[in-house]
Length: 420
Length: 119
Image (cartoon, rainbow over all chains, first blue to last red; front, side, top):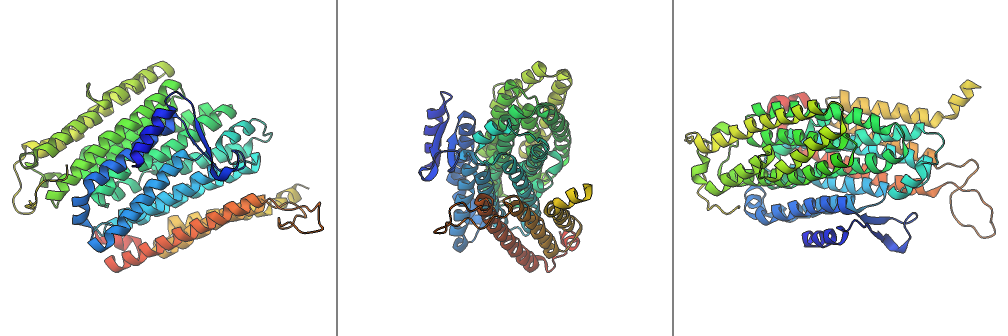
């Protein structure tokens, strides 16, 4: 349902116009407005698409993991997350974004903790701590901006920031907002909550959150840094590039390296998610139109690929209790379709020509060559990390297809295969 | 004069100090409840910042009174905003405490290092 609305919205904004809707009949700078442009329409598509796909496939997996009397609450929390995320994207009001962010975060803590795995609880607690600190930092930044401009409407802030005489509070605000959102988006050194939260969450929740939760925080980050601060603060371009680029490069390389050595399937994919967020941030840090469009593209493609991968994982988990790689030997013989889907999505993650991942990586490389004096080095980084992606995806494929099945512990439940 | 100027920002100094105290507690304590207390302190600091910035000298509550026309009043918007943020903070705290209860049920402890050892 929401997905079809999002599709209709996308068609409506494709001509580059932004739709505005004034809540409660108050005109934009005073009342709270909703606004959708092409960029937010893409993110909307990702969110609603991921939610729809996950929910369509969710029934068997959720039946298995969550007791039936708690399922209505689980679905209610799911819808809260969905509405929170959508709210963040369509809102044109800085404070409203904070409120929606907290709605979606609180509900997603519930979702992650909803599974049978007790290790999810400490993971959620850590996520809650870091998420709240991130949101509070964002709140401080919004407060400082409000102090200097007297408005919360994003477009209005952009107009009025130019008139501000004392620029220091705005710089501090930019710092707070960037750090806070980077925490939420799991940008490299602030990512420690991701692997555990993704690994121990119920499988369908992982599909949903991995595909969109961090993307939405990144979207807000791009909104603020690109469209508001970039236009008004002179040095901001350089500062932001210097902040984001090293972090994203380190994130790409280190997280890919970690992913190569993770033994647990979901953990491995979660680490690769951090690396992919690095790619998106790298594109943004070029501070050019080409870089931004590469990022938006990669956001979309990564959501597609990672959502598909985790969906395949959820199907595997339906049959296998233990998701460590050495327990998954020979799964391809039992679940050929799931494993084939896994391979296709994996190829897209690597960026093999012919898949969606290739297009966005190609755009990223083009943007790197265009815009930066060290473009060659960045291309090398992207290529090296793609090779690392080949390694970590291959280890999974090897386990699925070529290893002998493990007897005993890797229990094969005699259920019909109906996830996919 | 310099000192007076610094003191003029008294509330903002308190804001910065409370913020740091809260963040320190979140990072350094291993007891989960103490962490939550730290988080709560951390959030209260932000409330103080918002409430400080809406204060206009000599201003009263922004309520229309009959017979009074040129009353100075404080800016109501940050107050409304922070009311929302307080609600968010309370619900975060409640959810965090609920998590702690469940952690206690599952692990029998709320010390972070013991939880890590248990897995």
